[in-house]
Amino acid sequence: MARVLLSLLFGLMLAPAAWAQAPAQPSSAALFAATLHDAEDKPFAMAQLKGRPLIVNFWARWCGPCRAEIPELSAAHDKHAKRGLVVVGIALDDKVEAVRDFARAYEMRYTGLLAKEGGIALMQASGNPKAVVPFTLVIDRKGNVIGSKLGAMNHEEIEAAAKRLLGAQ
Picture (tube, rainbow, N blue to C red):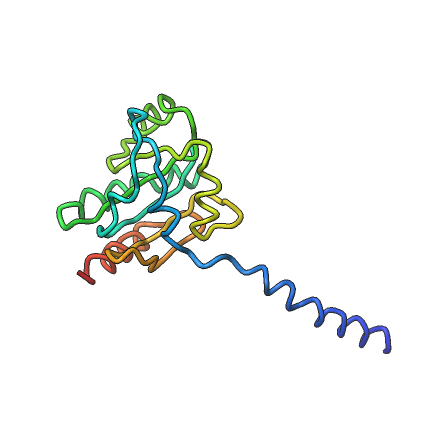
């Protein structure tokens, strides 16, 4: 009985350490400070997107769930771009031609950028400490992260994010 109580007490002492490992609060500060690269390998300052409603999706060519999201993100872009929504896909890759070919093959119709060597650090600074992909941020016109998701977003989640962003104009 004493061993059971000691084990329980020890477990309770360790619990706060486990709680301290909670994910970081998502932030757009690092994202808007970043300069990425477009499909032509030209620098693209993310600061130029400040003030716009954004769905920002970090992805990789080798990621199956990332590939599954592309048609839904393209559909959201097609449906809501005229109302100001900007969908951005940030590839964790440094091979411009490979990403450009991939984007064409998967009919990615939204803004595609490459994070190159800084992608992992950018995701971590944006609220994804384990650098898992896909990772999506929903950012309002004020630059506030109003939603984020680790893992693939489905059609309903993407539509809800778009409506939340555009309904709050």
